Image (cartoon, rainbow, N blue to C red; front, top):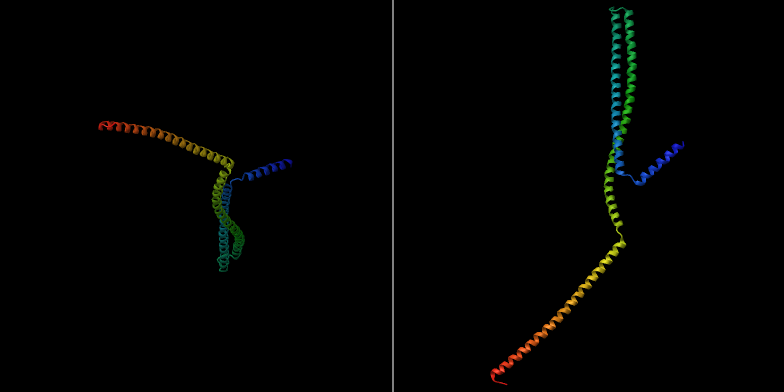
Length: 235
């Protein structure tokens, strides 16, 4: 008894483990449908066999009834022939009695076969009802399986999306964005700094070039003026 209790506890634990792991309901449903189809095949075979018994009983009953009627006819013929003097009365009575015995036995056999026929036909009707129920359940479960497969696809996709979303670390994402903002701000400041330096360098070079170009022009103008005055004989 203790062993059975222990096995029961182990079985219960395993069953709970299977429930916790949530076995694939689609596979379980498909297996259930396969079992139902096996039961349906067995029921069809059984119904065919019982139908065969009912048909056999019906045929045997008909055969027995026909033979019983034939023996009765033979008994009548024997008595008629004895009445005509063709057969001795004692012999005709003996043979007619044998015919009636055979008729009685065949009549009883016919009745028994008819009872068997009714019994088998009753079993056929019950099996036929069970088969209709099995077919209806199989069809219903197959339709439910289609719906279950569709729901499973949706739930799996939703689960995967939610899983991906759940795996996203919000704090690390915010931290990464802050670092990106800081880096962009640093790059923008550095670019502005280089722009200022470039502007300052350009301004100094422009001033130098301007100073040099303006001195040269004045010198050339003074020299040209002196040369013109000398040419004109002016002091």
